[in-house]
Amino acid sequence: MNNYAPGTMFWSRRHMLQKMCNAALGLVTTGSMLATCGGRSPSSNTTSVKISDAPKVDPGSASYQSWLEVVTRFEKAHPQYNIVGDSYQFDPTTFYPMFAAGQADDAINTYFTESQYMIEHHIAADIQADFDTTPFKDIFSPDVRQVVSGSNGHMYGLPANAYVLGLIYNRALFTKAGLDPNQPPTNWDDFRAYAKRIAEKTGVSGFVENAAGNQGGWHFINWLYSTGGVVESNAGTKTTAAFQSAQGVAVLRMLQQMRFTDKSMQMQTATFQQGDITNAVATGKAGMCIGAGDSWGTLYSGKGSLDFLGLGPMPQNNGQHGALGGGGLWVINSKSTANAIRGAVLYTSYRSFDLHSYEDQLKAQVAQNKPVGIPGANLFRGSYARQYDAITRKYANLPLQNYAAYAHSSVPLVPEPRLHAQDLYSELDAVMQAIFTDPSADPEALLENTASSFQSRYLTTAS
Image (cartoon, rainbow, N blue to C red; front, side, top):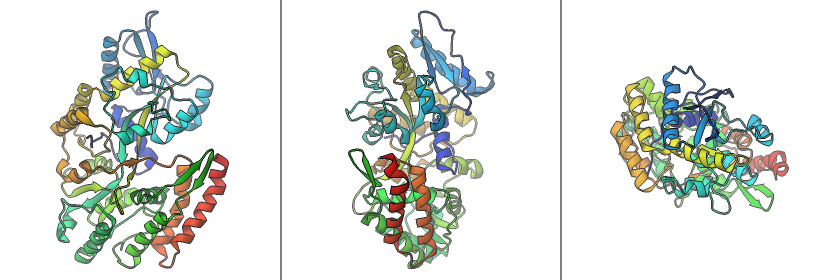
């Protein structure tokens, strides 16, 4: 299974996704809509296919030349297509009007959160028949494929990269506390016990968590998934908030007790965001935090050796339920011609999954002293995943052995909420802040009030 994805760390979740998309494609892009020519000039015998994946840079730069090499190789193997690159980056405020006006590209790189909306509103083309003609038709893990599947079971997009949240921990602090750094906790009870032991034996915070910048709510949903909870329920066209459940209350009670009863969250504040908590673990001020493997990009650049860090799967409660994940995917424009749709499927498949191109990319990253082997979600399966991982291990300059528990985990990826995710995260920030600052805060009341507010402000209108 694939557990490594190229990427770099950016503390904003939205920025993180965009940078993961760019890194997985080997691109340096901007928000411009400038179109760039492909490997050859179009002719009457070719179908032009416009792809949102071209770097807006000097044509003499390494990034542009790398993109052009891929296009040229593809066009040589598929002379019936002419690839036209566009440096447009997906933005819902511009893309959907462009689609309605018939001005969107044939292939667009977007986020997991957009896929089901695009399927339901007939924006994404059914690509199953065309994708089945490629060598990559069976490479995706079931939970990732589900993100781009319609009600008919057909594929309406191609996942290009993915992350899933896990447990980042300081191996040196584990050892100092008498814990095995190769055995991170995998369930809530052990996680809570590890955090308390680290605090007692080392004098630093056993665990730190996000609480601000929409990231407290983001991580609350991740905890909710790990105990089998759901964010919303759907009945016909009606969507109802469901996070104010027993599972949601259990999340808040555990964190509140860790903060005020166990005293294992000693340095916790109401302002922490992802950069704060990851840096706390990296500098030995805290033992554990929740995060994704993309943090290794920035840490590698700043510290070099990362042998002191580990990554385990998201601890689960009363069974294995899942962890919050996301990523980037290709969607093909349903308004494009049949020939353009087929060309877009063939090109994006080759662009993202050709193993020779992937190896060339890793060679270049090593030569530029960039991190290789950043742990990611289980995007692939089967023989393709084994080949992909073998190439990664060949060039890795990160300590893959420190991520073995994460890499071998089968915790499913659960996508972000479908409707108004960022608005929900913002409202849940206040809930997390109350739990971390007030020992008498009532988790049940906090969630009931937030669910009522979110329902009236967003879901009732959206349903």
